[in-house]
Length: 134
Image (tube, rainbow, N blue to C red; front, side):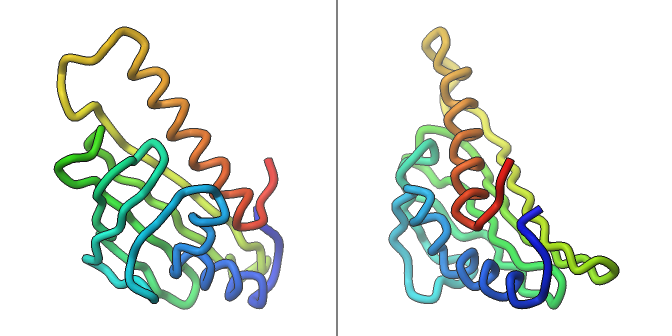
């Protein structure tokens, strides 16, 4: 949970949709301002290399981004982050989910585990950048 209230939801959503939270999390991004769905973005982190902003969710109770890797990236991955405003309680929650696999099938021993941990750390940093705690 990030906290409570519409004001918090609006501020966090703006940060997320502009990819500002990603930048504060240490994930370098290069995109148009403001980014729009289908924009090319370059991420630095576990999803190193070219990516596409696959989807932007802009709904009254849910805001989010989905980023997918393109050819030239180290993995085939989709990174999804969304915020939810729960109307009954006013709670603001964040969900980060990454699904990935190595781009090639010849992977060095231990590399897949390191990559999985890197994606997990990236998600943790993003939640913290949005104001969340663990």
